[in-house]
Length: 163
Ligand SMILES: [Zn+2]
Image 1 (cartoon, rainbow, N blue to C red):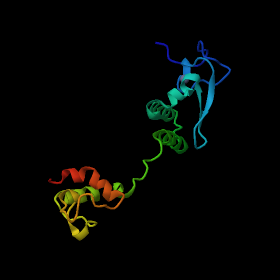
Image 2 (image 1 turned 60 degrees about the vertical axis):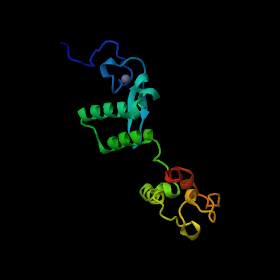
Image 3 (image 1 turned 180 degrees about the vertical axis):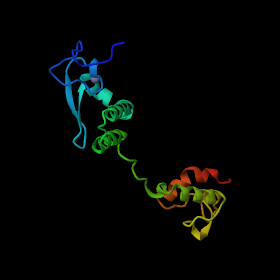
Image 4 (image 1 turned 90 degrees about the vertical axis):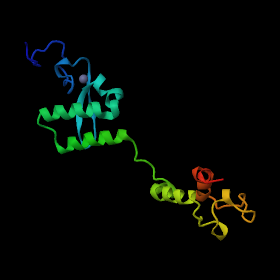
């Protein structure tokens, strides 16, 4: 079996660098693809395409280059960082901070459980339970505070209360 060599390799363009991934199978033009941290790599059109660079959240190109650089003994910290940054960029921005009580799901769920058991809600006049068990003095249509508390009443909590 012939070992791969670039010396007089057939069909490999000689007037430009080979594709870092294709090596002896390089065909067509290659170009320098710039990553971050001053890292750049020569790739063929296919490997330089957005389709390949973003495939599987960037893991295809990241794992491939990592292993190639590792084999070449040049997996420097700058290259590590550049690969990490590539993955991070494709992962998108971190999830947006949640608003109001949604930022504390544990507290919210505990409060909903208490209210469902009829524990007086802090905003109810006289500390009476939620509107679904309201008396004529405290009709269910009484205005309740806007915002989160109202959402709690109109979503799961009120429905979970006994009639
Ligand atoms: Zn290639």
